Length: 287
Length: 119
Image (tube, rainbow over all chains, first blue to last red; front, side):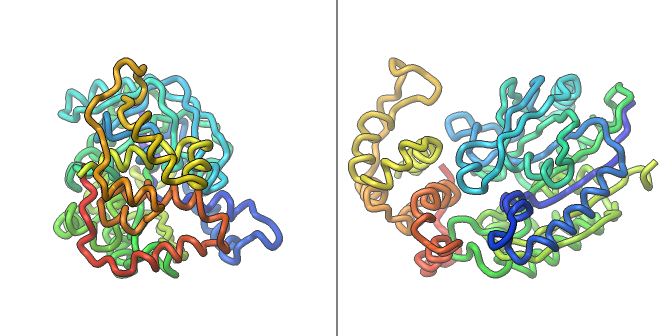
């Protein structure tokens, strides 16, 4: 059976690539510390020596659109092109190319369907920054095959938070039952409090630092029940109009498990939104 | 209300570099052309299978023709789509992050709960 060697949850800040590669007058004052934190976070994945990455993110109206909107979608393709024209335009992100772990995609689809998750699939999927950003931060050599999994945190009606947790638990079970001698890391990205296109956007901090503090506590302590008792589709509007991306963190809490304390926690308070980085080693440490 | 069609306009213009510039330079003409020629396209299908029933309401057409992004927010257009397209058109005219902060200021009158964006 495959081994789940690391569970990683992160924000996906599209400005990191440009900030970290800028030089001279173009380099923002927060870049050096940001790079230092990201490189330390990267080491938590490197130490786990994964062979395959399951990547959980959310398409930002790039390929998935309102005329045919899946709630949860698994990419099943031998290759994936990545990043879109408007991400190059706004964030300076490079075009990227991935190899797919197609047999694990097929396994997750078949077994996921049988477990009660009506997963959509795509045989030709162009990945966006919700998945390329964590590759840039955590695995910039981009040398591992991936299984992309997209969630709808964007276009209501959305699945409820509990469903994200349930899917996270299922993903863990499916990875651990995959009959292949491979080391798998599951990496998912979302947001803490975030406002986009509203009056609270682009402030000196995230729009709701108190929510961020509590969210970091829920995640780092594995307090799924506490989080579920307070977070609803309605409540997520309050910290910022794009905060439903927090449900991808809840999915990753489901992968890590109830009460699972994160082995690595770091945050970085930036303008606009707080960065947050978490790693769990499910088997009590890196072998 | 045709929030879906507002979003379809923002979505199809934002992903086409030529349309981004055309909408920046000639908003009213672009909106009129788009509603006549593009609004009913079923994306990824040929023209013979276009839809037949999609059109803007007057307030929606005016908001788009006026580059009136606060009004688009009030009408329930998806804020991410609006923000992304308007950054593409107008960020270049401001200091870094200047447009984004002006955008927030122009929406400062909006209180919770924000307009529903469900389509």
